[in-house]
Length: 344
Image 1 (cartoon, helix red, strand yellow):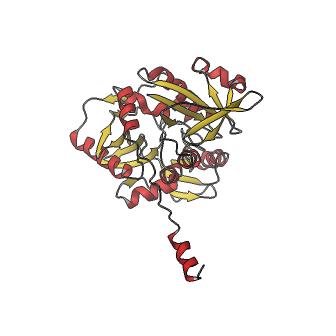
Image 2: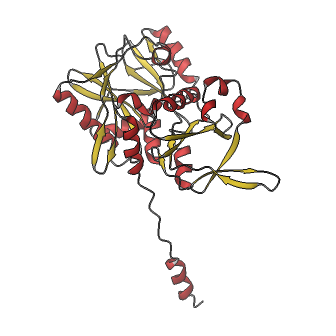
C-alpha cells in the first residue's frame, strides 16, 4: 500500500509536523510512502524520500521540488511546453499537519471536497478538537470529566494560584505557562496572547497524573494502543515536550484494571462516530481515581506510532476500513415539479 503523507502547513506547529513526517519515514517499513509538503504560503510540493531531512526545509531547498495542486481523487502537476498533466499515485493520504490547516478543518475539508481517501479527522471533528473550549464543552456533554476552567480577556482569574494559562487554539504545548503569582500571570497571559486571542485558565492541581491513549474504531471494535504514563515535574511546556531528549515516559504493560477500563471508556465516548477515519490520541488527567480529559489530539505527533507494537499493520487496518462520504442523490425532482406546476 502507498501512503501520501501530507505535512507542513501555515501553522505555529509547522516544524513539529516536519519532524513527525521524518519520523514516519523511518518507522513505516512495510508500506511505500510519498511525501507532500505544504509550506507557510500553502504552496504544495512533492518531496523525494531522500530529501526528507530537516535541513532541506529550513534551507528552502524544498522549493526545487515538483509543485503540485489538488485534483479529483488526489494531486497533479504539469510539465513541458504543452503543460501535460501527471497525477501522483497513492492509495491513501495521511493528514499529518498539526495545528492550523491540518487540525482546524481546512485540509480535511479539501480532502473531502476532492474525494481523496485519507486518514484524517473530519471537518466537524477538527472543529471540536482544535479549540480547547469546544473540546471541554463536548466532553462535558458526552459525560467525560474535564478540569474546571474559565475563558479570560485579561490577566484575572477566579482560581487561586498556581494556574495554567493556555492559548485555546494551539497544540504541542506552545504558549502554555504555569503562573504562581500575579507577575507570572501577567507574563503568561502576554505569552498566550502572542499565539491566540482566546485564552483559557485552569487551576494547577498538585499530584495529578497524566495518561495518553491512542486508537481508532475498526468495524465496530476499538483498536487501542498501549497506555502511556507521562513522567513530568510540573507540566509539559514545549521545551520539555520536544527538547528534553532525556525525558522518559512509561509504557504500561500492567495497569490497574479499573483505571484501564475508565480510560478506555472515556476514549470510546470521545471517539464515537465523530472521529471516524482518524487515529487519535487522548491525553487524560487522573486524580483520586477520577478521569478527566485534558485534550484530544486528532492528528497526534508522528501519528502516535510509538504507542503501537505493529504500526505497519495498524496503519493498514485503518486504511482498509476508511469510510467514504456518501453521495447525495440529486435528481432535480423539486425543480421539475416547479416547472410542471408552471406548465413548462
